[in-house]
Length: 414
Image (cartoon, rainbow, N blue to C red; front, top):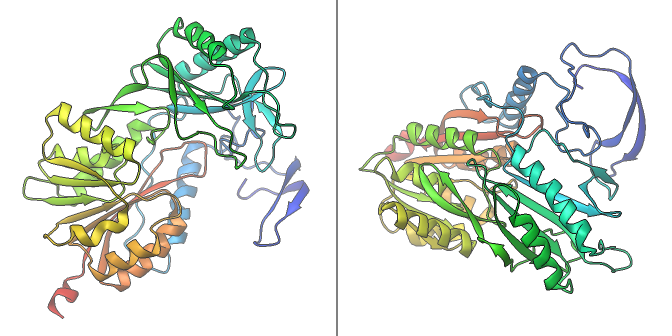
C-alpha cells in the first residue's frame, strides 16, 4: 500500500514500462490506513485491490490520480471525490469463469489461475444467490467444463446481472456445440429460483478471451431486465452496457445536468449514449437531446424507453461518434462525451477541436486518456470550468470524472 515497505517476491518485470508484478511476502511496517478486507477472495481474484485501504484514503488517492493526469492543464482544483453511499453490494453484474470440477470463480490477474469467488461481498446479494443456483443446476446437467487447450467440453462462463428491484437475468456462455436440451433444463431449474426473470444462452467459440458472443438466445423467461435509469424504464439485456454502480452513476448524471444548465432552451448531443442514461437526465429537464450509439441494440433500447416514457425530447440514432460533423449543421448548446477507457479517438478529438461547443461535458473512466484529450481541446479554445471525480467502484483504483468545459470567450472575440 502507499507508504508501506515490505519484502516482495517478484514474478514479472515489464519490458515496456516501469512496472513489476509479484506477491508480498511480508509487510514490515503496516500503514495506519490498512484495514481488514471484506471479501474472502481478496488479493487472489484481483477484483478489488484496494479493499484493505480505509475508504477515506481510497477517495484521496483517486483524487490525486485525477490531479496528476490533469497537472499540465489550465484547470481549476480537482474537487473531492463524491463518495459512494455503499462500499459493498453495489455491483449489478458479475461474470464467473466455470472451472472443473464444476465451480464458479474468476481468473487471477494476468493469469489463467482460477480463483473461487463465491460469497463475493461486492456484488448485489441477488447475484451471489443466483450464481450458487446456477452452479447447482449445471452440476445436475452433467455438461462438461470447456478445456481451452484441448478444445473439449462446453461450459465457459456464467454471467449474472441484477436490477435494483432484485430481479435477475442469467447468461450461460458455452461453445456453440453445447446441447440445447440440456441448457433448457438448466434454465427451467433456474427459473424456479427467487427473482430470476430470464435465462439466455450465449454461444461463444472465440479464442480471443471475449466473454459474450454476438447472438444471445432466450432459453426461458424474459430476454432482458427492466431497470429504471434516470427516471426512465429501460430494457437491459445480458450484453447491454450499464454502469455497475447505478446509484452513483445517476448522481453523476444529475450533477452533469446541473452543471450544464439543462433546460427547455438547450439543444444537446450525446455522442456515446449507450442505453440513454445521460440523455434521459437532460431531456427530463426539458433539453432536446440527440443520442448517438454504435451498438444497435443499445440505441434501440434507448429509443423504446423514451417512447414508453413519452419523452419526445430525446431521440436516438445508431451511428458512431465520428458522425458529429453531420450533426453540427444546426446550432448546438451542449455536447456530452462518455467514451470508453481509452478516451476519444483522434477523429472525434479533431472534430471537437475544430468546432468546440459552447459547453462540453466529458465523463471519463480513464484519467490519463482524459488528460490527453483535454490537452488538445483546451488548446483549441475550451476552458475547463470544473473537475469532479465520482467513486463508482469502491475498493478499486477506478475513478469516474465529470469535467465541464466551455468555449473560451477570447476565442469568440478573435
